[in-house]
Length: 299
Image (tube, rainbow, N blue to C red):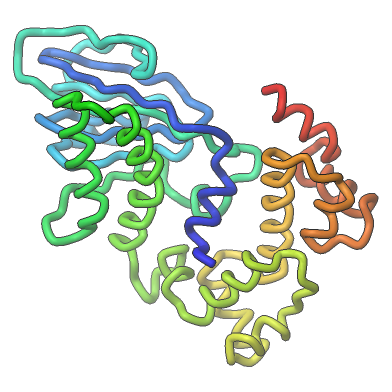
């Protein structure tokens, strides 16, 4: 069980949208608030990210930006360039006569009702700079994307979406590695602490099991108190609180992606009755599971 991949799969609610943004200065593009996670890759040239709060951030070739909450922001050739509203998936950017920059801009569709802590605890702006010698998979993917988008060779329509899908995990992994510190806590620690990651794998692999803190502690070779402390420090919440969260996240994914009866979904995530499951699901999502399924199917 790959916990990070499982989290991203559960959070994704649809395919990513993206657009090749080929611009010549001066240019300035304002991105309105998105209900997904917005991303930008600088494939050629340079740019400035203009976040809603804070100083402008210079970007160069190979740099990747993720805005997990899709906050309004802008990207431009210079912090002082005039801005126009822009949707990279449906329109062409305004063109100047100056230096060229090639970007890939887009949005990942994610479940915003109950964001997983991997995403909810990220800052509003995540920047992974092109750092020679680090994150080779990410920067190789960005390099290939640049070549595919610039050359427009046969098969690019199949290659580009697959690479864009992979980028979300690659950016998250690179960010965690950049911020990994044994004393810092957070998910960079949760996914590298052997005992914690083993317990997360157990929960993700069998969310319907009747887990107790003592059971998980025994399986990872720690005392109950030591395990509970390490898990809570790394993950940000106690083991059984996380288990409850993951059960509901799994239920939402099953309701979105499958037509299994509600009683079957309830059993898969550890509830002995459909009524108890429906009550817990409504408490977390605000609507009964049947209503949730109908809403996401027709969205």
